[in-house]
Length: 449
Image 1 (cartoon, rainbow, N blue to C red):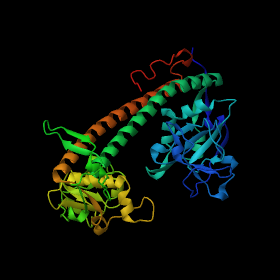
Image 2: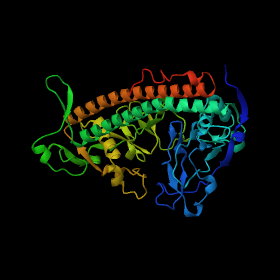
Image 3: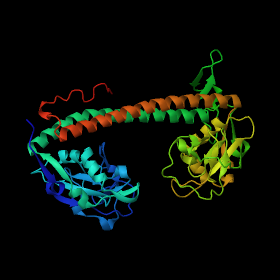
């Protein structure tokens, strides 16, 4: 027999609602017994609650007890990109002196009528999210919000308190299994990316030797031995770099181009993952186009393209298409027989290790400007023999393809797990099955850690 339910407004199920301040705050966690912190919206995700995502409030905002978060509260984001507005989370634990910001609502449920865990889950169901999505407003998809009354006036189909508790107990156990699998997938992604990063920096600095096996042409990686390891190199070369590797200014390896733009050219973009391709191959949302296109330059396949403001973060690579780029890019060709793909990998490694940022001499953190060509051309970089360059770039390209395939497979599994968790939560809180007779089997069938 179906459990009886009643329609309730969200505000009827709460004893307290609050939002706090959103001042400019120090980006670190609180220390000692005096400091107060304000939560970032990244503390609130569908994957769970993360109290460490907070900043230190200016002292004049300390002591706002009304907005202080406590265990048992629910937090809901109410400002930001559309897909990040309306996210709810149950606070299962929290240190003292953390307050909700003005970009979120703190909801304190009335435990006499509702279980906070159940209430948080029902706010995440498709019907609740559709209700909120229809009420989001803003100047752009990246700047959406809804009013407090919109949220608090939401109608919810609520079972008895005892049934809410049964559902919440069941879901805590069932979603814990899926949560562990999701955490394992994230760890796998991290390890795969770390492996690729270590190979990139090791191969382009000479710390790891990449050679072609003369008998079968297979590329393998090994550490150099003997005298090579005792050689102390400088700059971007590892101490283990072979003796025939040079360190030369970038201007000796490549030259800046100024190609003409054709009427049919589309925009080329250098992405932080090292891909340089037509913007239309990925996405165009979020980019600003110049009506006059002043300073745009042509790009040919095989050109090395370096983003002067983002190259320090890995936005450098070899273009795979014909197109045009803005003047913030340096479009280059090699002066001799050097391999452009190796040089792109080397520059990317130099950026990801922080070497380029140190050479830029900028004072502001994460602000690196190489728009003057000379500021980039003077930087020294590794230059192994051309045959070695080609062997390394071939190996790194093969490794990158493998890495992308593995990460895509993990992404597919992660999406499936998240969808399965949401479907389970929705079915349980909306009464599509009786949790008192559910065994919890098949929650993660076929998806092993």
